[in-house]
Length: 203
Image (cartoon, rainbow, N blue to C red; front, side, top):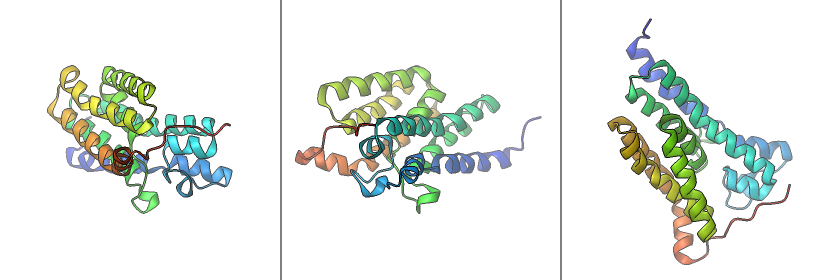
């Protein structure tokens, strides 16, 4: 039986926002007695967690932050495969939740891992392209921020060609814009030549 439209159209974005809001990087920091918001780039994302807590915690944060984007979109796609508007809203609000977390006074991470999780759910080939772009750019320049921004810029472009749909394309471009906006400090440091190349803490 098809769920009532007026119920799920509002419930799904809210639930996706709540799921996206879970601050895994901060939770791992609490387990170690270290608040990543007080070290390094003061961010709760995987890169800063790796710098402050160690590689293993960084990888766990990366995986779980991706899962926050993948899970709601995958579930919504399974339930409402013909409703790309609801699928797009689910992906967008998962990323918004990470970037403006309900549990952190509407502050949060930069959204890259969660955005990649959304890409994996809506258009797996776009996800693979974004990962390839990140790895290539990071290998050449050594900046996580440059790799991340390049990867997320490739997301809406590849969706346009590989998974064309007006709602999914709008979602991808909006996610890209939010992530670039959240990287404004990185862009300023890159422009001034003060951006640091990535080096994880051992452990």
